[in-house]
Image (cartoon, rainbow, N blue to C red; front, side, top):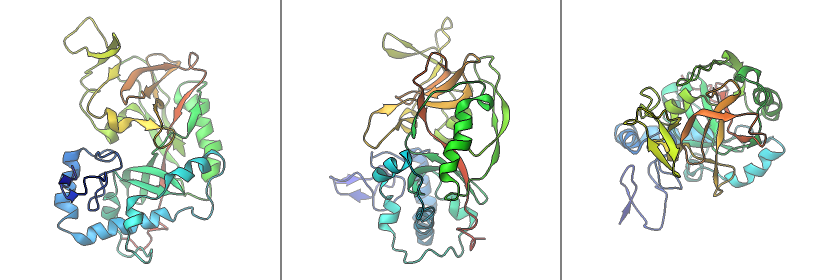
Length: 318
């Protein structure tokens, strides 16, 4: 008998989905930022003993799925929308109405780590602050080069906050938020510090926070690519590695389309030089030294993040 690796519910041996818990995805791994241990803890302490909380998860998911239904973004987004489908939450939902009575901030936080269809696009919910939800695109939107550095002066920042924002304007209530872009944690490269963003890329620190922290960043447990494999520099003082290679690699991987080959994607943090930006490699490792933007004219993957205000959709909450 096959069982879900998260909640250990018996399942059909031919399926890769669990009918009970929301943290088991099509790849058969714990979703998003949750480790299997964290997901099991949530199942045990929140979902299993309190069935009405599970109903609220499905209820909120259904409400979020209705955002932007009437007017989906045009162009490239529509191509991606066709392959998104619906989340298992919506398919399994038994709700017959989308009223938001008694939905609280605590209820919203139950969705952290899950994937949701919002405005026809598949997103990961990374964080919740009051009535604000931090979304990260599950797939890479497109490939874009970067001109100008640091982040606050880059062309990619301008594109995200103007061109891409205009596609969502009126469909998502995007919240403009001040965010910090820190100096490179391993190299003496300055950043643009605080900026106000509508749509942005994640930083090195945010990737570690939301995808999992192995202490590799803070302790500089670095790796180098040598002889076609990663080699840890922990016991080699002569080597200063520029990669974080840990158990969270898989959760950081991203694709342009479902079932497609994984590709690398930009971060907004500066790399080892002023003309470089950090990035996530196609295998999910974090390159702290980054890619030089002049030497990368073909560009890299764009994985937008944004905060949305859902107070109108959840105005019945307390």
